[in-house]
Length: 428
Image (cartoon, rainbow, N blue to C red; front, side, top):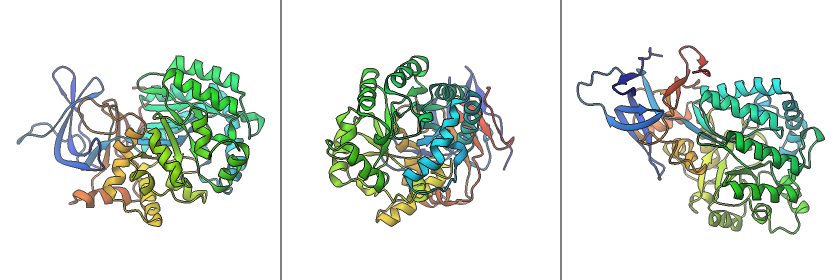
């Protein structure tokens, strides 16, 4: 790795980054390369992007790097950080054997604080600057996570995981105290860089009263909603038994006010055409989590189903069923899943889904996911493959599965992770 030059300071305390840029388009799955570009940054936001003029005197910020916007992880579980690779069976068995015992530990504040630091560092190390995150069902642990994200300056949607049935008592929280805790977390943390997301774990974990309360909470405050949908055949069958009056799994959420333009549904592996149509009509979005679907044997989401309906799609690591915090690895898994389901997808589209596409899925297209004026200066540096451009470059960035962490991660215009010193900078 080449030595980095300090970002150049222009008059008026403006930072100027110089380097090779890969810039996602705002609305279509395409990226434009700028071989030698300047990114002007002020007060944590990009003010201008332009080619470097001939004879530019500014040094390259990180020689040998290619700069992209920070990755956007649309589905990840904070309290599963330490159980990555727990191979204890398909979804429902895995929840009972691995997830619920681990999530019960998050009632201990010191444990939650330690994992929150590991979690934030893992995001930064892999170039993720924005994420939609499930916390545990413990309000104190969720508060700890918000605080850790705030210290790092990360953009995130964070939810207190709502569950009042279908799990051991240690991880359950009844509807009334859960919704009261959510109100308190909204008052404390909901804002621009950090948002509270209404987060029913999935239909099986919530009584109708809690689902209705969650829908009302989201509507009252205009909040994003995140949950799981149609991941596993056994799960779908059990939802049908528990909610016999609902049309189908998606209908459970729709009947309780949880299928809206602000909703993000993870997995969607086994949706029927009618459900896809209703999801599209609602304006909801999908988080595609191929690595965790492979790991739990759930199947492969047919990527063409949301694409041909114009449904917003992002990529999710789904740690800890997902085995990596790296969105590049998830993009490679998405390529494999597309081959299995008969879809065609390019490296360029996959990088777009990991950046601008993910931002659109979260309703944050005007905040993150691109290198463009007005957006947050959340940027990452990757080692540039030599003598490659266009689709070949994108393919190389996606499919180098032994690639290590990013070279640098900037959040709001400041470096928060650098490979040179192997550390994140949480107190800047």
